[in-house]
Length: 371
Ligand SMILES: O=C(O)CCC(=O)C(=O)O
Image 1 (cartoon, helix red, strand yellow):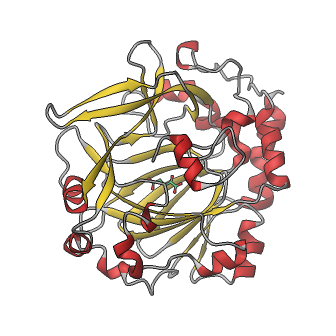
Image 2 (image 1 turned 45 degrees about the vertical axis):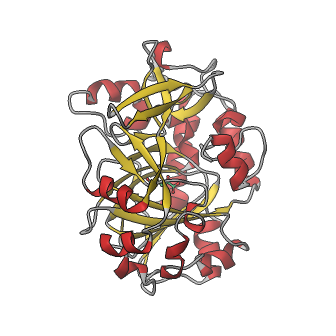
C-alpha cells in the first residue's frame, strides 16, 4: 500500500469529523449527548466544571492532607533514573533499543510523596500503578471523589473496569501508546499535557517490537541496573519521541517523517477541575506540570470499549503494510520486528493481553507484570 491513500485518510478524518482542535464543553454533557457526539464518533473532548463537587479538588493539593489520610498506606511507587517508564532506552548489549518498565517499590505513602516533591538526583518517582490502584491502595481517599463518572457510566452502559490514581512531578513522562479502554481522565491538581493522535494515524507511530526490560534499583548504591526479561519477550511500541533532546531534533525528524511532517497531533492541556475524554485506541503522550503542592494528581476511569465495527476497520487498517515514498524506515539496529508493521495481534496496548481478547484488569496486569 503506497502513501497517497493512507495520507488522504489522515486528512479526511480531520475534515469530516475531528477538525483542528479538541472540543471543550463548559459543563458535563448529558449521557445521550456524550454518547452521540463523542463516544460513538471516537472523538475526544475536554469537560470543564465536571468535578467541581469533589472534596478532593480542594483537599488533595495539600501534601499534609494526603500524607495524613494515607499515613499507613503502602503504595506501589514506580522508580526510574530519568522519568521515562514504559519507554524505549538503549539496549544494554546491542546498538539498538529495548522497552523498559520502572522498578516498582512498595513504599509508605508519606515517603513516596516526599520523593516526588523533592526528587533526589537521578531518581524519579511516579505513583502510576495501573491495576485499579485507586480502589485498592488509596481506599482512604474514596469519599473525596466519585467512584465513577455518572454521565459516562450511563452513556457507556457499565461501571469502570479500573480506577487509577496518578501522582507525579514535571520529570515524569508517559510515552506514546494506546489503550483498549474508553478513558475519562480527571485532573485534580496541576496540569497534564497530552499529545493525541487518532487510531487512523497508526502508520505514523512507527510501531516496532522491542525486547522487554525492567529497571532494578538498589537503595544501597542508589543505582539502577537494566535487566532484560528472560526468556525474551517482545513488546510492540511506538518508536516516536515527539520531544527529541536539543541537538537531536534533525536526526529524529528524519527518522520519523510521517510523524513530524504529517498533520499535527492534537495538543491539549487538562487543568485541575477538568476531565479529558480520551477515546479508546487513540495514541497519547503525556507530560505534566505540578500544582502548588509540588505534584500533579489525577484520577482516571477506564471503561470497557466496544469491540465493534470501528475496531474491526482499525485492525484491518493497521494490518496493511504501508510504506511512504519518503520514509527511510527505522535502521535495522533499532527495529526488532520482522516486517514493516507488526501484526494486529501484536499492536495491543501495554495493558491489554495479546493472547486473550479480554479487558479483564487482573488478567491484563498479570500479563503486563504489574501485579
Ligand atoms: O498520566 C499519565 O502519565 C499517563 C496516562 C495514561 O496513559 C492513561 O490514562 O492511559
